[in-house]
Image 1 (cartoon, rainbow, N blue to C red):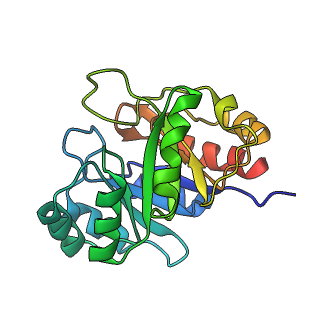
Image 2: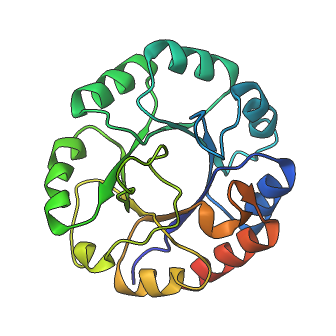
Amino acid sequence: MPKPAKIKICGIKDVPALNAAVHAGAHYVGFVFFEKSPRYIAPPQAAHLVRQLPSTVKAVGLFVDPTDAYLEAALGATTLDVIQLHGHETPERVAEIKATWHMPVIKALPISTPDDLQQVSAYENIADWILFDAKPPKNAEVPGGAGVIFDWSILKDKKFKKPWMLSGGLDKDNVQEALSLLSPDGVDVSSGVESSRGMKDPQKIESFIKAAKKS
């Protein structure tokens, strides 16, 4: 019997969404430190929310191709447990960030076709988690959170050296199907628990977590 998947709610910006995630049983909550995203939150505001988290819930900071200066400012302003890299960071850059800040790293990889899995091996020995997300449309300003599903069968029966999360278009109506087809170590949702782009819906958060825990 596979272990239940960890649940990550990404793009938290306010107390009602945070409370819904915590009370429903999320394992991770994500804060987006990418200014072009509709889910962007400034590090000082994120710090206010992080202080309200119980020790059982980990705070994840999502960055997109961050400079050292930006990481230093964000990590200096708020206490995070995990760094998520959601840009075009090379394996060398991921290793550099880990060595500098001594924190676990989730590396997001965009998936569209089976060939996209060729990039995994370069990151497996460096990142602590691999997150598979749908490849964004060409020229998209934001690399994730578009509510797009990729072909999950690409990952069917695949084994990886590190724990991995499934992301991209998940919601309360399809998360059980995803978890019945695949055996990810975690699931990550953002747009699937929103009432409008960038605005989290506490009821949808609770419903998603309930559905994910049923699987």
